Image (cartoon, rainbow, N blue to C red; front, top):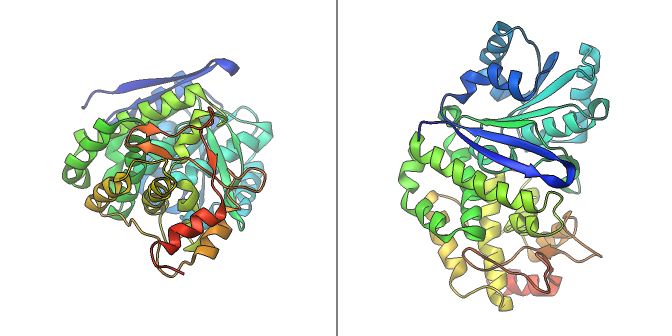
Length: 372
């Protein structure tokens, strides 16, 4: 799959539409892409120091050669830096550099630069045009698509943010060549989620192709990215602001966010989501919502990829449940879970895509595992 593919997202409520461009070598065409989809006087590149070291000089030179002025704003890599403080530092640096409303933001990197750079674009000068340029697999298959931006707080993940759709998303699987193995595996977790909620054949293909994906086969990775983006784009078009079917994308994320936060972000987001998917499938089975064997099916795929599938034993039920109460999906003090009936089958009750689950039911899940 060496040809470039275009996947459109149409949001009729706000008359917005943009394209996701996927293809090996797309990064080399960034100046041409920007001139078509997001022309601007200056470009603010929001990234982390690891991506900046690898690619910022190349990006700046390509844009400079095309006559564009580029300013790079890099912060220390890692989820612990996705904070209001980092957001403020980047915004202040942009003010000091003299960027005005004729500028645009390039969110360049993995999920953290994508979320934080998007939030900068949503808020700086009351909103600047945004282009998502993901470099991690997790960002390519999931977080760069759909317009969610934000930062974490000490109380939980992504509690401050905004919906801010990009002008385009540029995805070049060749950039994955420098991605550490553990981050590649973590990105595959979100692709497994897409198969689990929407496409059983896709999930089966991921399992069968695990060796090619882990070996960074460009054709396999491109196929993975395209299918995941297609699934997410279809859902986002139906529900931009997460009031209905988009909630299904949170499968694995309620417990996943809790264990990720409890770990002090030593667990990568994809690792935490892998755990969350298996545990929430177990929860659904216990409630009679999810078909028996679904959790085991997901565990088998995730284990083959090399991802964790159980909550670390040092995390007790009270701690995990306490963190879930801070989740942004909570309603009326009750925690919502996006459950599935089986692989590819979302669970809906009374037309609702997310359902509150009492804390005591979640505690029983821990008790059933012989945990405290």
